Image (cartoon, rainbow, N blue to C red; front, side, top):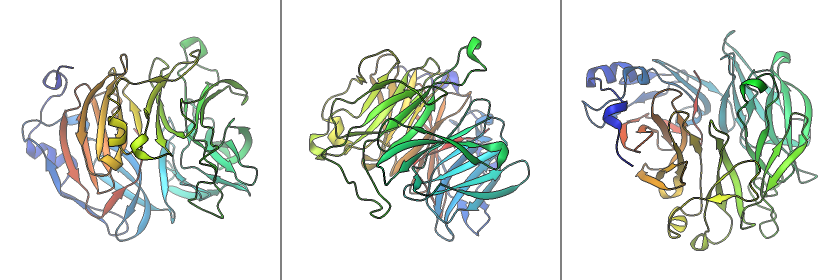
Length: 391
């Protein structure tokens, strides 16, 4: 695909870049963010893109696990005490939620308007999987959970207007529900409850054996679609029963992209990236040489579709690879290297993907070509697996 960077991304000076991101930040908890590494002084993104609005769970060298928000030049840390996985922002910007990674059982709620924060515990016999989702109107918050004694995946429904009290629970129609997303609503459906798509990873776990996979030989992963009453509408399975479907995103036209983590021998890894639309009888594999999947070590982390570009960005941290795919054809556009890359999110307007790493790096890539625009290191910060745009 041709490189359209020069047409889509204006340039700013090195001085403007350093002012926008700042050479170092002093954060709550005593952590320092610093070490700006722009690639080219005259090849920076549009100035507005420097007004970053990002959130992520992180681990800091000085204060452990935290929820990090980075808005313009105002970074902030909120201590969680446990490893978070994804941070989720409400559509109106009122709340920011950090979801504990399994087998932990808390939500950290930041009330942005009041400046207060508090914790919400999972029900007895449940733990979270690290992901969550607000409805488009912000009325409800959903979180995948493990009913671990029954070896059953559930989706918890929480009320943000009542301190995130749990009010309902739906079957996820599988084991190990991980990431969830909503299909887009048409204008006529704007007030309806959207259809939810669930990546059921298929792996049975129990907090008594925190990181042990209990059923690798009999696992049954799937993608399930449910309506606003929790009723199953459709379900599809991957071509191999050990392809644990974990992370997904939905494009503006309703195409679901999903990444897998292979539980067999890495050298035998089959295709790890698929797309799907409701009504299709099977998952559609991307077009790539078979040697790519063992090279990626059988592991996909984050998936992000860009609303303004025919692309999807997908990370593979075990191979330090950021991959860019054309959505309409399923063809690989470009692979970039970023050590321990994992989190990825798309800018809502500009043709940019942001990618974070466990080594503290944050990088920006052109959404159409995959070209790296800039990269910055945040000293003392280790970004977790997911990155969220919160504006």
